[in-house]
Each structure stands twice: as structure tokens, then as C-alpha cells.
Length: 108
Image (cartoon, rainbow, N blue to C red; front, side, top):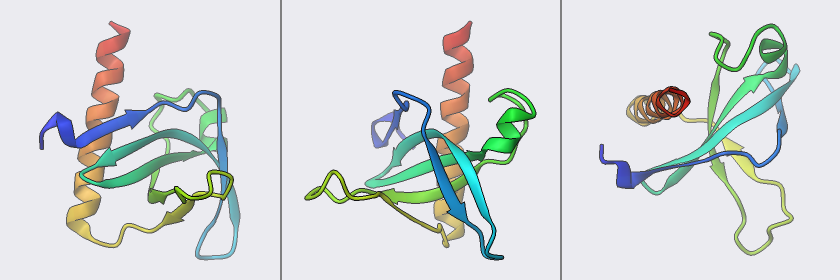
């Protein structure tokens, strides 16, 4: 995959999203990054309780979702949807791993 198909957006301030899981529980998650693979945007989230138990580079749980905003109404809440295709999910994980590698490189 070439770098021209992927872009990463760092949140300007710490943002959180409340996710309702399949079992009906709600979990507050920190937005790690919003990034693009191909023509689709994705969001990487980490439960806040995982962040509070370590730092952002700890081996916490990261959740990935498709991410979309309504271009006609910037005040509308963004929409998150599940990634159901295994190949798409693998591409998202690869892109996120590359993002993490770039973070480590930038910190050197």
C-alpha cells in the first residue's frame, strides 16, 4: 500500500466517544486518531479505563470503526460503523501499525 492512500489526523484536543457494545454496556473511549485508507475514513479508539491504567503506548485494547461525517452539516454527529470485511480490517490494522511506527520514529 502506498503512503498516498493513507492520511492520519491527530485530534487537536483530547476527544472522547461513548460506544454502546453488543451487550448493551456503554464505554467511554478516547480518540487515538482518525485516518484514511483508500477513500474510507476510520477511527481508532481506546477505552478510557485502559488509558488510565497505563499510557497511550501501553498494550491496551484498540477498537476500529468506519468513520464518516456529513459534509452538508458539520454540526451533525459523525457516524461510526463496524468493519465487517476481513481484508478491509487487515488493511486498517496495517495502516494503524504504520501510524504507530511513525509516532515512534518521530519521538527519536
